[in-house]
Length: 127
Image (cartoon, rainbow, N blue to C red; front, side, top):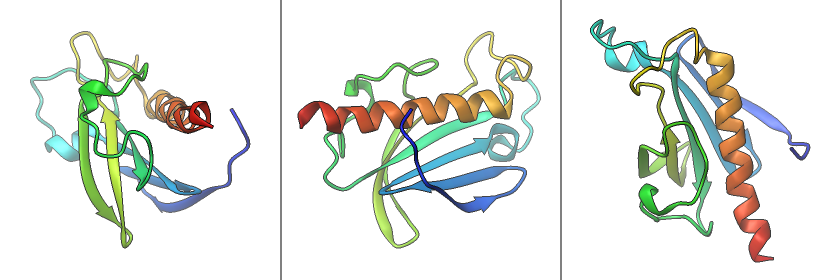
């Protein structure tokens, strides 16, 4: 992974939002999102990468984005964050056989950073 200058925009027990150049990275706690729906076993949370305008995959349906991420991408939508628009793509850890022990916050963060690197690589492949 190349060296990046991550800037923390928000960091609390349920949300971590970082900025890496033109990209936004977010990990969110599922319990916070689902308000503790207890019938589901799941991992700690979801991971998202906000793609800047002009990115190769901006506006592309998440099913059509060729990345390797846990369970495949399960989210894609244009969102405005901090005054900028991003095409946000992401994955979740609420699949069959996911669990908190298999998908703690640290592993969700690692998988999200891997997704970020795949997004950056897509731009480099065009150059």
